[in-house]
Image (cartoon, rainbow, N blue to C red):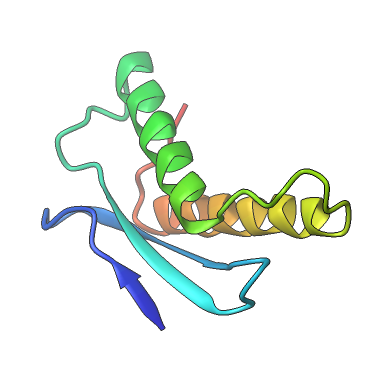
Length: 95
């Protein structure tokens, strides 16, 4: 399993997704302890961090490879679902 450490903060999410091309599990952390998730600005900042990390975890395939595009989208969906589940489990509801 590859591990990408994005932050060393106490409060972080661990995104886990299966990369479409290599079909191996990848993990990345997203720091959010510095954000006020009850504010719109904090939620927006967390969303931006999640999307940026997901783009790292789920590498965009060659757009000419039509079979890879659905797998790439599924990877991104799994990673976001994992992050949202962890936020809910930690009581850090966004929105």
